[in-house]
Image 1 (cartoon, rainbow, N blue to C red):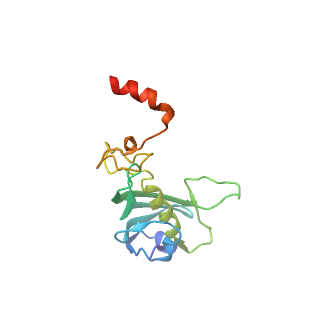
Image 2: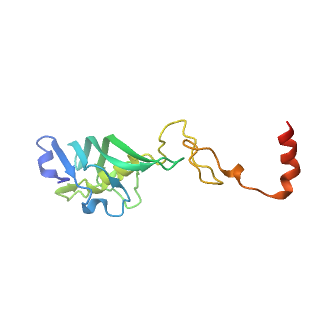
Length: 169
């Protein structure tokens, strides 16, 4: 589904439109919880001898967790795709923005590059809301819902004289 016949590129651009199920082998080891299938709508064009430009959009809805309070979130990913493929000139010619294709190839598999781009589009540290107060590091209370319970604990008795001063003010 995510493979382009490079021989067809010489005539005109090739469009790939479709979905990839969350259970597909493409997502093995990705540690992503999909809430809907991954979708892709891209067009590939030849940009020279053995060079290919792929542009379009991709996305899905995935499960995430607030980085402060761990509330489950539904993250809508809808991102632009810009992939450039060209023949590898020398083994040490590594440009991280360019994917390599063999000059002898007749097919171009977009699976791994699209997987990589999609995983990079998922926010690393999503928030349920900007003003999220998070969890208390001491008692684990969700400070958005309840107050901290740390003050309820007796604490270290060596600090009692300082607490007494605080109570007088």
